[in-house]
Image (tube, rainbow, N blue to C red; front, side, top):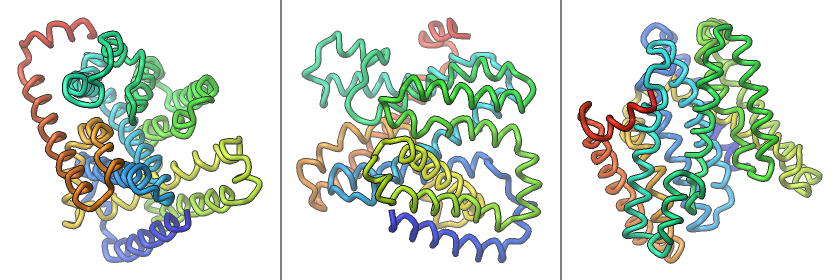
Length: 345
């Protein structure tokens, strides 16, 4: 946790320097633009990878919170992007598009894994359960189920035109959803991340005006919340009650404040050449998320530098291949797949 704070402070120093150097930032950059969100997805995926490599391969405790922060960023970007898409295009082909983007890559990974990798000992029944999310494979695939739930919720919530009422309903749904999934801590930790993305989209004009008036305060506020969350989380009465109410609340505010902090920092810094690599990673971030759990056994069995390199290279190559395969499948608007997906208009 202390290392996490040091990292955030380093980002803060950089951001303050660049805010002063780029005082005209609001005139030539668009908050949550395609370029910004692609870099964010790349950063989020790096955080998830570092968390899983450090946690499963090397048992490095300090990397554990990074995964939750990365997922938080993914969900914020998803909530924002989905709300913006509905503003522009409406709800036409809503579920069809979600299946295309989320389920088809997942189905391909599950099928290939069943044939060649870690699921090969499973029965056909297990495969069917995996395909329809009746049962989840080992790894980080809870995210698929989680985001699909929010897609369903949001389809109906988006019918509400008043943004204040919509925000209130989303928060109420989030609370109910978390109460129904108290046994699954990752659900509870991320329960407000998607709604925050939607709220940022709906209140973008207000947030933009506030940020112009208090540019540095916009960065300091999430950082202060992060510091307070870490301090409280490290207190003995909280640590001794791990997964209790206070600990859970601290985990939610920690992930959310860190996620929002990174969203803001990347807005300031995303056009720097140093972040180009994260932009490339962002382009295949979902594929990386799906593929990397299947290969973690490489570094779990042997955590040497050679096997770590094999894991990273294999994960990237398979993710790029999956990305290409999905694009080929979805390229034609008149293929057999679209015939069935049209049922979800």
